[in-house]
Image (cartoon, rainbow, N blue to C red; front, side, top):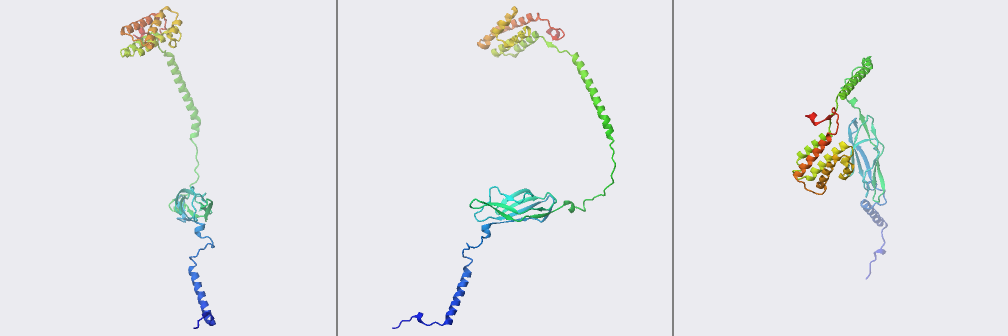
Length: 331
């Protein structure tokens, strides 16, 4: 039996050429079909790897005082992000009202404050890549024509022709020149009259002083009417009672008895009638500092002794009858 060996068979040159051409066409078509799906690492970076930024206005022209909207549309590279404080350069000369930040868009409201055309240079937006480095996206500037409000209402202005120059004359200047000195003179005369009248009235008025013994008796009467003793406030009663006596002693003897203790007062007196006051102050100290409880009869006796001492010492004083208001004058 014989075996068949195809490789040893003679081939037709024309048929071999056709087969090679078909294979070439087939592989070419397959490469073209699979080309878009193949990785393109060697190609130039796409828009997604570089990022993009574009600027647009909602109108091409607007009157002065209008607020226009500027939209910055951006696309960050893969892994890129905006910083916490968004930084935009190129709008330094624009009067920005507010800004709104949305994903992929920054809306900026700009007010047209001047009649000059609003134009900017390139606008840049900072971003941070995935490695933490700072980069900028850049786009061209913007331009908007500003329309004057006066030109829009040209027919409504109702301009009138310019009148001739009207001569003016100040009639009030002579009056001002003579009026101010006259007013000052009148004010000075009135001031002198008022001053003289007040001085005359003050010289006529003589203030009446209350005599020390009258003041002391009134204070004791007020203390008795207060009812503090009847309410059981013995310490408060005797504190006030000794204070009245010390003030009276100070006024008639000329030493600061109100600031002295009872012992200091005892060593400072030089009149024999004052020793009765020292005895009253010592009895008051027993109530104030030793918690002694006085009786109503004791209180009445001490008050009577104080009033008798005041009457006795007041007769030795010689007050000015024109200045001192005594009890008899008051009556």
